[in-house]
Amino acid sequence: MEELLRRSEKLTTVGQLAAGVAHEIRNPLTTLRGFLQLQLETTKLNTRHVDIMLTELDRINLIVGEFLILAKPQATRFEEKDIRFILGDVISLLDSQAHLCNIVFEPLFGHEECRISCEENQLKQVFINVLKNAIEAMPQGGQIRVEVSRYGMKDVCVCITDEGIGIPEEMIPKLGDPFFTDKDTGTGLGIMVSQRIIQSHQGTMDIKSIVDVGTIVTITLPLNRDGADDER
Ligand code: ADP
Ligand code: MG
Figure: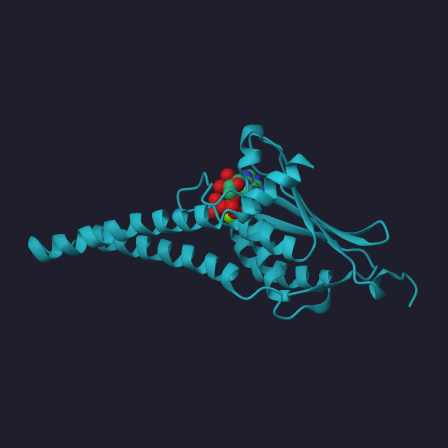
């Protein structure tokens, strides 16, 4: 219960979020401005400067892009979809990237229909975020298991298990804080955006991890009422 409260507090602090975005965008903008000033006042920019400028521009683009997902009107079009197909699409999308990193996906979907009411693109975004984190956590390669199963009569459960570096216990409560990242090129927005989307689908997202063993992300979503009947 306390955890639930803490999360909802975290999600409603829009002002804090806006201040964070401003801060995160201002840093690369300062760099860009500095280099352009340099070009104006002294010598020509060299390749390294231009490289940094491009990296900083990409970073601004990434941050703004992640926020656009949130800014889109919520609940625009909820449609009934089988979550196995959504996950199948996302896995195909990331397959070649995973392959390059010596990572294989192991989908365990079962035969039961798992129809839910959802905004397909938003859910895809969630699974892309979670699977990308899993890939990024496995620099040596390995396996990522993607399990879909019915959970009781009313829910469907998606478990994504990696064999990555894991997350230290003291970092777990910080997951979902905007801009919390331990990556040089991370935005620290993926989990926050994912939590928001899952919440707007009346679902829950839970992260368990052991350092040097791996991480399990469990997403539970309500089955569609019709889909809850086994025999059809
Ligand atoms: P980003 O990926 O841009 O850093 P996220 O919000 O997606 O932002 O993740 C925040 C942080 O949570 C990551 O920087 C990483 O430290 C940690 N994390 C998330 N998923 C995993 C995972 N599967 N394995 C290890 N660490 C993870
Ligand atoms: Mg991420």
